[in-house]
Amino acid sequence: YMKHYSLMRFPDCRFKCVTLSYDDGNKDDIRLVEIMNYYGLKPRDDNWSLIENFAKYIGKKDDIWYATNGELYDYVKAFDNLEWSADGHFVYNPSLLTVCVSVRGRDYEILSGKTVEIL
Image (cartoon, rainbow, N blue to C red; front, side):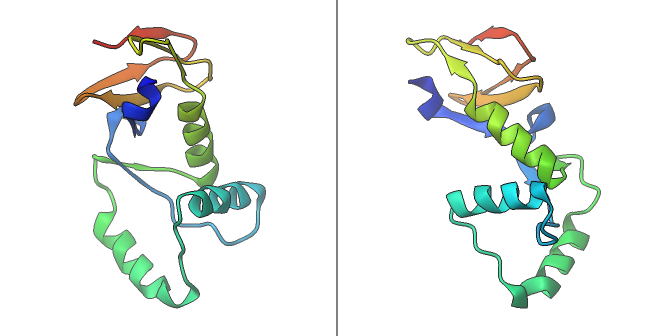
């Protein structure tokens, strides 16, 4: 129930994540393309200069998590695998990663193997 009302946050409860390499065909890239397709994101071959300029603009910012394709994939899977209580007051993290979520405007950091009460 609460899963539908929670927002994924990235490590350290950041709002933003950047990963730019996804086209060399390794297994992490294939998984990232699956995620991009799932969410309807369609990069094009003719927009690389825009992507490069964007990367320069957003580089070295504390509020952005810079992740590899594999890290992003693993994090999204960890978020998707959070286990919510029926009433939405507790969430359990069965993954090996710490996962951050926001519920009703409040951020929660759910450590690996831990259950957190959602207030």
